[in-house]
Image (cartoon, rainbow, N blue to C red; front, top):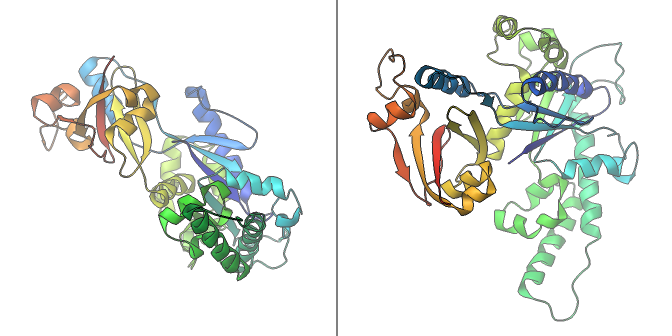
Length: 366
């Protein structure tokens, strides 16, 4: 699946600064991986996964040729124009809201950083108020969508009756200021309403934009789920070498950049994992949902693979790197050959549920 994250926030929350950092990361990514799609309001960046480098190292040692890395990717969509009244057409109004309908997760940037030179559109800095403004606009937009649904007349089916009951429940709840996900939580009931593309069904990750000093001081943020970043620092990081980035992050007590932490948190919230493929042609990471079976996982690589799936040869990542379980693996001992010799590779059928970090070679029929 192509994960799409929409970045929203009030003007001067730091949303554009964060997106600029993504664009810089995208340019570096696209230089090596020309398949990345680049559009004015979309940043396509790789999902951080150090396992790919280790897989490429193994192939280089065992096969004498280093394969290119093909990471999974995330599309960040810069959604502009949100102001109070967006649901009724203020700012970019419906254009803003239509962009949100297309994403899997909303990344809501909230400003905490103090800066007299950057005016806050609503006056004093107040993340709680800013969050409520955005939440209200999304609720009002959903209320409009639900309000356009016509009650079925005459002899109706059971499915139509169930759907109308859910819509009625939504109208009441939305009018009370509740979000759709808090009104209807049952997954089967949500499926009935999929065609409405309700905004407040979408998961929200709050990204609290702090100053560099606040980042070092670790502000106490009560929002959940949330991640604390300094958008200005993120933009500056993209101009540093990988080694300098690691050194700087270590100095401020972080293991990885804010952008990478956002991606990891989004995966966690959406129940996503990655399986890996490895050979002389490429070392690739593919995104799937937890609980996905082997044939559907094969279809992520190519649709024909799902139809023609026979078996999947599977090795756990740690076993693929070090099939002998040695404290210091011997050069050239890992990879497919070593995994098979040590009995770490196994064949799985159509009912196998793929696990995060599985290294897989799919057996496909003609």
